Length: 338
Image (cartoon, rainbow, N blue to C red; front, side, top):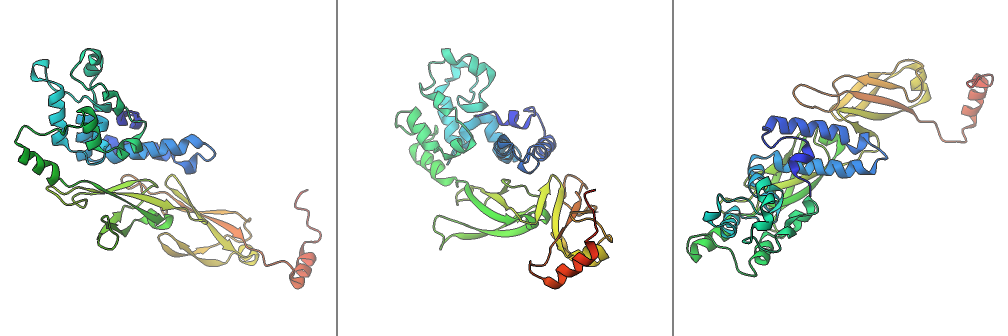
């Protein structure tokens, strides 16, 4: 599994603004819509989105910086992880450091061969990818490292049980949002809880311009505890047969008749931002694109993409004898190819 900072191409000292800027730039560059036919782009795009979901949040970033890939596992408990780290690195060996995953320091890696206090199977934490890490249960890792014995804090057993059972775990959910709604932002509901009938209903605000695979975090909306866990909602943007996103620009297919196109009629067009009235340029060619400035996807700051209307001529069904005679009369002598 690649270091998440390497995925976004940033330094570990990067601030939140630099992280967001790198994310925006990379998702625009490697979005599958602008790399059609390149199978690698979708995998790379997912990797970028996943990295930002962690580094773009102060809490999860701090845990990743301290514990590396271990912090991504299910049910991760930082208090018990610190206790395990202290157990692996006695005080007389110097300051403790994260013994697992991408959070390890270069010095720790250099001394790995000499560190006899680390479990023999510590290398098992070299996860293949982010999904692999998130499917792994934190308690299973500790049980494997310490041969079935639980890792407690320095307090007594009762206090340790309180810490282990008191912290609410993060919950995860997934919602599907049509592209037109993702462009302008919307609110959707998800049900949180093991049983659908008894689960809580949570409102999720999907920001305008959300990309497919983006993760929205709702602090304190996960499983109950002290403190409660967070809810991480993955947004799946559904494709639209008529609407396509390319970076911040949108391309919308608009069905018109040959008469409307030739005559240059004013027509109503349903866009993600509402219905607008558009004047077709008289006698424009089929597939002509009409640009509407700043009607596309919102970006950083005041940046907004454009909306391109693509006129698609919809011909009547075959077999209209009267239409055929009219076309023969009007265009029998036409020579469009020479």
